[in-house]
Image 1 (cartoon, rainbow, N blue to C red):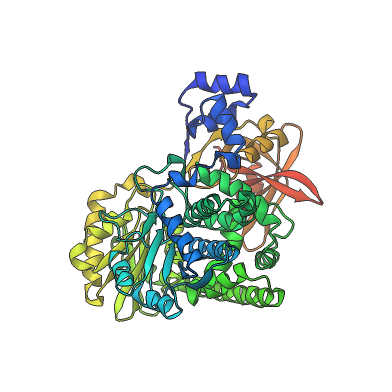
Image 2: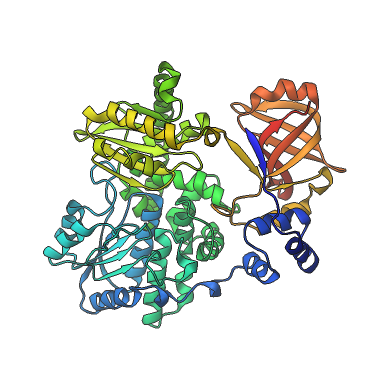
Amino acid sequence: MKWVLKKTTDENKANLLISECNVPKPIADILLNRGIDTPDILHNFLNPTIEQLSDPFELPGMEKAVDRIISALRKKEKIGIYGDYDVDGVTASALLYHIFTKLGAHICWYIPSRVYDGYGLSKKGIEKLRDQGANLIVTVDCGVSSLTEIEYARSLGLDCVVTDHHELSEELPNASAIINPKIEGSPPSTYYLAGVGVAFKLAQGLYTKLNMDIKSLYEHLDLVALGTASDIVPIRGENRVLLKYGLQIAAKSKKIGLRILLENCGLAGRRLSTATIVFGVGPRINSAARIGSANAPFKLLTTYNFTLATKLSKFLEEENKKRKEIDEDLLNQAEEKLLALDLDDWKKVIVLFDSNWHQGIIGIVAARIVDKYYKPTILLTAENGYVKGSARSVSGFHILDAIKSTQEHIIDAGGHRYAAGVKLDKSKIEDFRNALKKYAEINLPEKLLEKKLYIDAVLHKEDISMEMLKWVEQLAPYGPENMRPVFATSNIEVIGEPRIVGTDHLQFRVMGDRKAYDVIAFGMGEMITKLRAKRTADIAYVLEVSDYFGYDELKLRVKDIKFPE
């Protein structure tokens, strides 16, 4: 793995932050590289407040959406919530369920099935809501590209309010109102909102128009935090505010289902972070949808019945265990297929097919293969007479553009730069694979296939301290475009005896200026012999808090180890 040090672009600005804000030099370098280059911007970044949220009515379509929903409330019309099956869609659906219930609405809801409905609005789902008596459908995390489906809803006499955050098509659907922060004229601070963030803005608009206490809305920021963190959206603008406050509220949530979920993750009473959501809570909510239905997590996040919440959370635990087993089995099968191929067949791009692979799991496994072999990967499986696939990519290679370049061999494709989906006929698999290989030969330079670790700043051993950790913690919450900083330290002394813990994790201690620190290196057990022999190493790592018998301790989580000659 190649280490690449991010260089500070403006030493004068760095010195300004150091002198006026008492920022350590490594932190000043990190801030500048993230566009935080004046004391005022730094103050707002370190101290996000609810007051920084924009007026919801600055979003185009908000006025129409709010008026249509209020009209439904007054006329006692039934409102149907049409969600999505991922964490963002489920939390957004649960949020509007809580809000509409508080407003006294008559509600029904529909969460599509990943396997039977696919992504987005479907005619089947629209019919289900109509059969439940809906007069108005409010979509969350979907709908902005569903022109045909919304026309179908209109033909059935149903109005639609669309709330979505996905990229816009050339033509927008003919809905009663559309709220999407990517529509021109939206506040820049809202551009990266997740679907649950857009639903929250709608709730803000309703509370404002109805002269309700806006502070009572903030108890639902726990749901906003879950969806925002899990959807891997940039933690910039309003996302930063919503996530920071939402994580605090989630830790003390009034929702019984979420409290039990946190207990199952071992997070009860602990500080929550983006990472604990992404790797702990999120997979449990997602697991049911990946191998079945997302109805259970939706019910869990909306019930106040302890017995039901306990039953549902236990079900999600079991589903998550099943998902992990399927995940491991599928990964092993995929690697067997891969290693049986000629190296030329996957020199730059990996395309594998098995008719028995689970549609809900192949995306996870594709990401794991990319992480291990660092090549764009597409896994394909059979479904309903067609072949469907999930694709993941490496930094700098637009996988959706690559798939669309093979348009004569595919039926449909969607997604974005680093993750996409594709649908094709089984007879076209080899043509599709060969076309992708040709595209990659021309458009994927070898240098993009070299895995890089970007270093935010260099720390000398005397810089490793609780004070530096406190600065690192102030930069949270972390996520895309504001990742936890990666530091590098050269020739650091290893003390004591390194040992293997868990499956294949390396644990050891290093000597700082006058204090030793615990280090964990996940999945690096093979380095133990060399570490014991060399006794010094260059390490790339992140600083984290370790709760040691109720006291905060500094620990280093290693990303890579190199041994100086």
